Every structure is written in C-alpha cells, then in structure tokens.
Amino acid sequence: MLESIIWILLMGFFVGQIARRLRVPALVGMALVGVVLGPHVGNVIAPEVLGAADSLRVIAVMVILMKAGLGLDREKLAQQGTVALRLGFFPGACEAIAIAFASMWLLEFDFATGLLLGCIIGAESPAVIVPGMLRLKSLGWGVKKGIPDAILTGSALSDVLLLLVFSLLVAFLSQTAATGISLPGGLTLTPLQLLPLQIILQISLGVLLGWFAAHLLVSLLANQNWTQNAVQDALVAAGFALLLVVMAEDFPVFSGYLAVMMTGFFMIEIDAPLARRLRSGFDSLWVVAEIILFVLLGASIQLDVLGNTFLIGLAVLAIGLLIGRSIGWYLSTLGSNWTWKERLFLLPGNSAKATVQAAIGAIPLALGIDGGETILALAALSILVTAPLGAWSTPLFAPKLLERGEVDPTKVSVSRRIVLLAAVDTSALATQVLRKAAELARRSDAEVVVLHVIRIDDPEGSEQLSHQARRILADIRYRFVIANGSVSEEIIRTAQDNDVAEIVIGKRGHRPLDEVLVGSVSQAVLESSAIPVLVVEDELASSHN
Image (cartoon, rainbow, N blue to C red):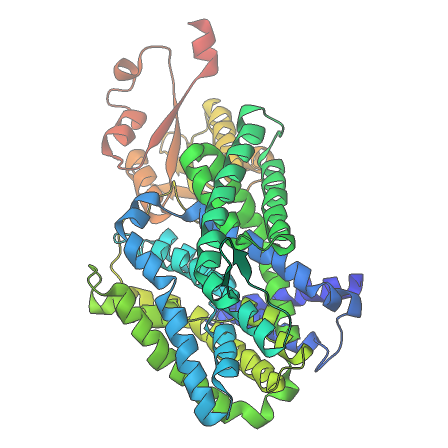
C-alpha cells in the first residue's frame, strides 16, 4: 500500500510537470499515470488503495469545492445571479435529454435508460472546472462580469439536479422500491412528483448548513482561538467540510458538495482574514489532493470496455454537447449582458466530465440494469475526451473570448513570484539592510537581489559583502549583483529589470529623513522610484539619538 502511494505521488507529480512543460494540462499527465499504474495496464496500485479510491476522491473533491467557495464573489454573483441559476439547470438538463434521444437512435435504449446515461454524462466535473475558473479569476479573465463565478455556481447546482434524477431513474430501472409520500386526505405524491421538492430541499438545506458551518468555524478558529497557525485552521476546516459530505451520504436530504462550497462562500462574508488564511491552506492541500484525484481517476477508466462503442459513443457525446448543451447555454444567457464571445466560452469552460462519471458510471452495471456495460463505457469515454480537452481549452480560449479585468486579491489567491532588492554598500549599515530584507523575504517566501554599486572612492569590499549576504541570507534564494555607474540610477534600473516588489535601502545619520537625505542616494531613489522603498535607519545612530 505504501509503495502504491509513493508511485501515485511521485509519478503523478513528475509526469504532470512534464505535461505542463509540454503545454498540456497537468491533469492529463496524472490521468495517464493512473491508466498505466491501474489494474487494466500495469496493475501496480494495491487493491487496498483502489478499494479506498472513492473515499480519496471524495476528499479531493471536497478540497477543490472549498477552494471554489473561498473564491466566490458575492457582488459578481448578484450581478449574474439569474444566469448562474439558469446555468445550474438548463445546460445539464438539455444535454441529458439530447443524449437520451441520441441513445434511443444509436444504441437502441429506451428513453428511461437513455436519460439515465444522459444524467451520468451531463454532470459537470468540479475537479476540472473549479481549478480552471479559479485560475481565470487569478488572472482577471471574465471577472468584470463575474463569468467564472457564474460557471462555478451553476456547475454545483447542475450536479444536484442530475444526481437526483439519476437516483430516481436507478430506482425505477432496477425495480427497487421507491415509495412516495402519503399526505392527509388520501393524496399520495409519487417519486417523480416529489422531485421538484427534493431539488429545492437539497439546495436550500445545503446553503443553510454551509451558513451554519461557516459561523461555527469562525467562532472556533477566529473568536475562540482554538488554533495557532494556518495549517491547523485548514485542518479543522477540512474536517468540518468532509463531515458535511459524509452527513449528506447518510442523510441524503441536502447536497453535501453544495454545503461545502457555501461554507467557503459565507466565510468570506463573515471573516475575510480567516478566509484568506484558509485559502492559502487549501491551496497547499490541493497540491496533494489533485495528484491523488486524477491518478485514481485514470486508474478507474476501464479501457477494455471502450472498443465496441468507441465511434458510436463519440457521436452520442457530440450530440449531447454540441446540440443539447449548446441549447442550454443559449437559454441560460438569454437576455444577459454576455457577448457572443463570452457565450462561446462556455463550450470549453463548462463542459468537462470526470469525477461524477468515475463515481457513478459503474452503478447501472452493478445493479444489473440493461445496457449497464455500454453506460460504463460511455462514462469512461466522456472522461477521456472532455476532461483533458476542457482543461486544455479553458486557458487557451479565455484570452481570445473573455475580457480581462482587475483581479480582486480578497477573493482568490494570486500567485506571483516576489523579488526584493537590497541595495548595500561597504558601510556597517549593510548588515542591517540585509537583515531587514531577510526578514521580509521569510515572511513572503520571496527571493532577494543584493545589489552593490561600486563607487570610485571605494572599489574594494565586494567580497566582504558577498560573504555577509551568504551568511545572512543562507536560507533564502538570492543573487549578488555588482554594477558600475550612478548609484541611484543603477538601483532603480536593477529593480525594474528584476520586477522587484520592494527596494530596501539604508539611511545614515540621526536627523529627520527630509533633512539628512537631501541630495543623497536614498533621497534620489525615493523621489525617482515608482516601486515602494523601505528605508532602514542606522540603529547605532538611533540609539545615540
């Protein structure tokens, strides 16, 4: 079992990175690792790990849905509220119906079995869509109109609808008892008549439990201070989120995944600083969860059942996507302020299949439903085709179809390589400048450029400064740069060339800054630099003062 975990983590990571360097989504490489290591090819993964695959996938999906909730923007959702709701119902429902009719024609299914297949294939994959939309938000694509937020919310609602219809059809086709509810007066509601009530109940209770969980977490983590660091915050929040998912399986009256997403959403509104810390923690959890999710997803794909239905399966998928889902997208954005390019973006951004299909694709076969093997084959085919295609096309077409807006760092993690510039000379003040730069770098995991401009009156000392930098910045990535010329001009030029976030420079003397630095290097940098400048005062001079 431990060997299997090592294979999954190491091969999943490195093959994913190879795929990324080849400009292919990392999940494609991870899924290929799963296929190679899985029981249908290499048979390397231990049965114990494969047996726990469903639970591990649930944990991974919980992590990504919590990330999605912590990235939602209430203002943008209010702006696109009706579109988000319609995206939760029309695309998935229209695709399921189109697949039902296509399977009656191409696979000779009856309508109920075809609709069962449509519910499986029509469900959207949070594991593919959520990371893609969060990345677009971090880059600013579509954020002005809240397009990523609308897609994220609609995707979660769509899965609630299709999974409810799926469970109803499974009970009907497997001849499992599915009783209705008897009301006073002798009136009985059938399971089909109860479906709208179930959908409303699943959504409303999911939102309510998310609100309650968010308040409970804020009370425990922020108000009562049960935790001491961001790692513990993320651990406790992940435990509560997973509890919501498990409760939903035991008491299927609410959507556990929607409750998790709403927990993150409400936490932004209640305590934004805590939400920011959790966002960072769940970003770290996703690094591991992503590898496990997609490697095990690849391992679950049964390649041996694809052969006989490959071409017909592609035709069914194409009809569902290009006809059914396209009609749903049109109805969802009708009357909105979306341009035709933004509507067209829904094709790559809102159509990926993966986790739901892997979770429920084999259920009809296990229950002995006619056509179960074909349903499993098409579920596997939908993963192989749409997951890599969606992950690849989303970042490719976003710049071509969406408008770029300002990124809101309070709603999404913005990944940026942080570089600091420490400008030093051969005076004793260099040690203090290097220590301050080291302190800032450790806080933000930044790199440091140490710049020494050789002056005509002091040509020596570079070697001593290099030794100081090596000692003080021993645990920090840094570069030691030597330059000639005007000191202030070289500082500003080097800062611009390296895209630094902040310049750290020293100040001699104990007089006020505006008196001592007139005409000095520090004053020239302060007046000329568009980059923030931190001035470190001479500690010895300050103590004498």
